[in-house]
Length: 326
Image (cartoon, rainbow, N blue to C red; front, side, top):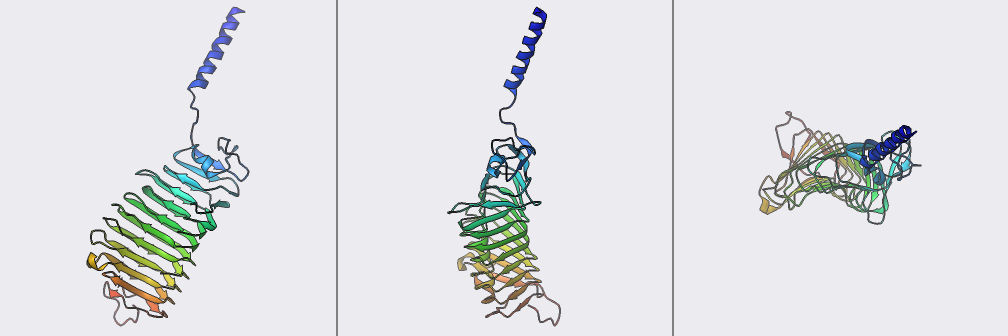
């Protein structure tokens, strides 16, 4: 009997020691949220969380949050490499009264993916997605609408990259996409198959306050029906040139310029350049224009017509002989 009691006591002590050394808040590589989940749960597939904010603390760095079923999963601040992927169901993020939908404030080297999200500011929310940190931000297959400020504000605090694809942005009070950093931050932004409509302006890439180069590539996208400009490339200093390559897009029915390159006179030539190719610029108040030392340069394969004032871009490279295109 004494031997049995000894081994029982030993088993209890071993179990207790294992419990004590087990991590109190282990993080999983993949976690789950559900419209009927509970943030007190471990965010596993069989016990999902209710919100993205509840799941993120239980998700390891470079991990992934998935959606089991439709739901409203709430605003969240992301401070590490992370993927939120909900492309196979309805993943709503409602944010109101001047708050932001998703804030990304991750450290250097971070990679954040946002996929399949429906971000709705309900007419009172500020930015749908706001980047304050550094690293890479990927926005894919998302819907963004009804915000008082910007659909996407990319204000990285160091060298960073922005990628947006297959995404609709509508009814933004300011810019559909604002790319601006007031510190020394080299920024490369690539937007493809993006639709920006009924907003204050379409896209603004602004080097004001920056001291290094910023670059934008915009392809196969629609920028239309905005109350301001379609695409603006802006720089105020030769030391911080801003370049945009705009190819294969339709930029139409905007109440300002379809494409504007804005370089302050003191910045010298070449500080703000938009290279325009294979695009349709139609029905805007001004088709293409430059401010100060800015320049819109054309590959001579665009259709610029039907604007109140079409404008005449500069020639970037010689076009086909005899073509009437601009």
